[in-house]
Length: 223
Image 1 (cartoon, one colour):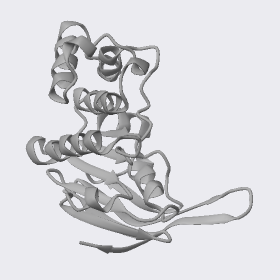
Image 2 (cartoon, one colour):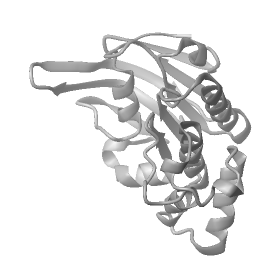
Image 3 (tube, helix red, strand yellow):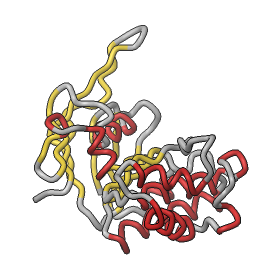
């Protein structure tokens, strides 16, 4: 059984001025235990491809297949809740919840509550470098790097085996960016997760196990 596969994906959308053919007949596959980088210039289709893999959009033709089931035939909200965690450039934390509460939220959605949830939340926060003194802080009281690590801890606590990161270092300085990339690589190599990173940074991409190059909506090459 393949873990995750894009099978001849095509996706277009209409903006104010024109129809944009964002992804054109893209096929590729992904395994657990590996980190992948999707690279390309702005407008190349890399973020759209990530959205399709995350089930945020459905392709016009072709299919995204997760463990032999096309996303078009599943409850895609449940797919993201139970399997595919998306980490965004702007963190997407709940501003009125503390760091700990943000992590607890993802577990509560899956029915994990009480002492078990609190212990796991603290464990995952500490695993990404968030100390107890920061657990009760709100996102605005954390640095950008700290907020991104909380977002990663939220994905870890929920147990998602597929991590999809859209420019996760885009708002971070070099030091914090390197720390976030190290965490994502550890998730793939030490925790047997499938990690897919969209990035324009070729230095980050070079650390991945495989690189997918997007150009004008086409998967130009992989290495």
